[in-house]
Length: 574
Ligand SMILES: Nc1nc2c(c(=O)[nH]1)N[C@H]1C(S)=C(S)[C@@H](COP(=O)(O)O)O[C@H]1N2
Ligand SMILES: [Mo]
Image (cartoon, rainbow, N blue to C red):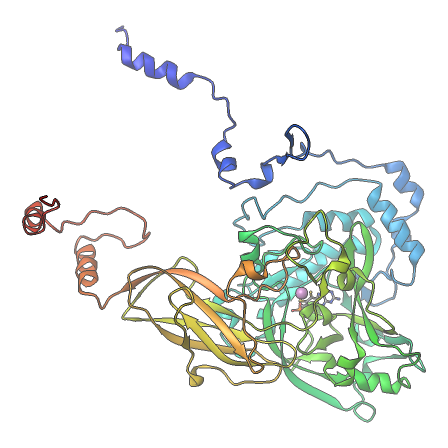
């Protein structure tokens, strides 16, 4: 046996020395796992560190939970034929019991995905917290997560991007978002705060009460009776105020509502033709508003868990909006009965407002004096000033979002794509403005927002008061290299978009309406050098992807370089 060479031994001892820092230290130092970073507290005399908590133990006080009562009875189905419906809003004592059930145990916290890596799966996020709250409540809610997922698989397109499995949140892939001016039902985005109730149309009833002269209930047949209520049909774009949230998240983390921040891209927007009746007519049918009522509160059948308190999905809109016939009670979407996932048998469609107000599975309308105190209205969907954050914000500090501002998005090409072209880059996308305004001009820039080219009128889809416009442009671009393509829209009131995300970033992560920016690598094939190099890559059978791979192609010889240096000396004589 030969003794190892000395230098080899040295190398060995060097590499077997213990490593003192954690294996992911570099990642943590680089902010690539910021959720693992301690908070540095510099407020005292000496600096201290607040570490992230160790893995939390899940606990359950079985005795306390049993004492609350039989959950299958407490949280039973409210009405026959209404699967998944538990009524909370008229039963405060039931709400209190549900809260007790949820606070007599702890649940595994949802992993952070804003600072951790977003899982490369579809569904992207499972929503384990919401699932376990439903299991813990039991009764009618036990089967809701499974039933909901079955409905998703039945009603949605196989290519949907499932951002959150439960409550279900999904958007179509970019290529299909603006493929058609009217979004097919199976591709329309879905945003849920709870499960998908399954309601039998024949057993359905809508209740209208609160500050109206004569409260009434209606069957679907009543509502569809054209001799009482004239019907209306309209093409309407609905946008979730969370659209393009991923851009805010990827720059600066934040927090919105309790539904884990569905990392929406540009697809939480869709356009459909809805048929139904104007809510104004129904209010009239109940004798009109009384006692200076100013808002209409909408109740959805689904259960939303917020801060471990439960409720039905409730929001409100002002009477002024209803009065202008801009609120529809709809039962038809693109010529078909409303899909279950979109609110069958009846939903609200509020034209030009954020999607959140268009309540699905609507079962009650209540006339009230001030905006609803329900969490989705008064604690979420708020637009904060930038100085409002986790430790200092109050719900009153946010503006309740109603009308969507003007916005736009590039759907093609994609972020980080390499585009080979002959001087023009083909771009496609959408533009939208809320509140009954519409896109008048869409502009693109290939240089980060210095020069802007308008989309030619003939490349914009038809305009409508309540609808988006899709667009296409051949954007001039001379260079080779990374460029930033920017898109912005001007609406008919000459509103336009803030130029960067930071200018409109807010803790609530809503309304990402800044000019949409993507970076792409431009390869302009009209340039001779580029043509030659591409030909060489081809000749040597070298793959072009990925861009970052180092490939040497035989090209310039040393002799050529030397010759150049002779005529272009590097040095200067004094
Ligand atoms: N009952 C009920 N209605 C609801 C919601 C909900 O969770 N429950 N989500 C709202 C939100 S935030 C949006 S953006 C729209 C989405 O409508 P869609 O799923 O039909 O696209 O529905 C709204 N109506
Ligand atoms: Mo939404």
